[in-house]
Amino acid sequence: MIGAIIGDIVGSRFEFNNYRKKDFELFTDDCFVTDDSIMTLAVAKAIMEAGKRAGQPGDTGEYGAEYYTLVSDLAVKYMQEIGQRYPDCGYGGMFRRWVFSESPQPYNSYGNGAAMRISPVGFIARREEEVKKLSYAVTAVTHNHPEGLKGAEAAAMAIFMARNGCSKTEIRDRINNSYYPLDFTIDQIRDTYEFDETCQGTVPQAIEAFLESTSFEDAIRIAISLGGDSDTIAAITGSIAEAFYGVPYEIRERALDYLDKELRAIYEEWTEFLGG
Image 1 (cartoon, rainbow, N blue to C red):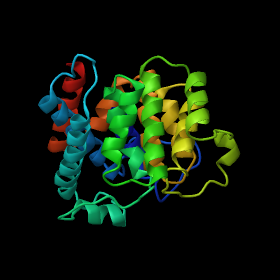
Image 2 (image 1 turned 90 degrees about the horizontal axis):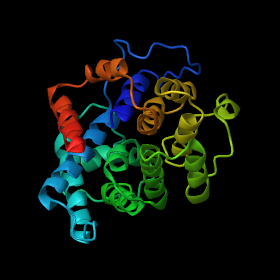
Image 3 (image 1 turned 180 degrees about the horizontal axis):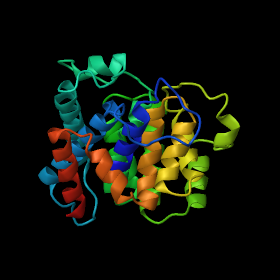
Image 4 (image 1 turned 135 degrees about the vertical axis):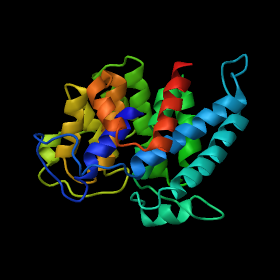
């Protein structure tokens, strides 16, 4: 999850001021935490609370349908509770109305918010089927359009595969065959790529940025250099890169300095939850 947070913070100052090169300072006083990090932490909180309430899965090693219903309910609860405490962090118009609604309902969105917040799923799921079920559970509460669901699942699956030792070739083949054609390189599209808030216009590009990288930091730099919705692309790329490479200590600690006390507490709870 820290990979998504790092990508968000580094990309925050470039979202509306794209820089299409890799030679930039990662962290400056102009960087800040956006809705990408805040909603990622809210999803993590929902998964943790569901895990505490549900306990260990049954003899089959699988959770039942009631567990995923609980995850969905808690995703709504924590995205609203935490989200309402950060009203100016960059929500899109429809999602903002959802966050503050007294009766929040999914609104058929295929925006890239579905994928920017999904990384906790990729890090907690134990099987591919669980990736799919958890991804649906935390996504369909808002982004219930098929493209929104696909974008979130694709990002979560890439994280899951990277975390479990799959090669980049294996990840590329899976994304190509099950989700998106990765028939481009970042260099080929960089000059003409434009701001795009949809899953289908950002998730494949974010995954490709990871696949072309040589390290965690290089992945973030490639993602930023593409332009477009920089914080979200880098958040998605960073989450996969974390699972594949790990995160350098210095970069992780620098990013955590941007989190306030409440957000830092959720992050620390998550690291403990994963360790347990």
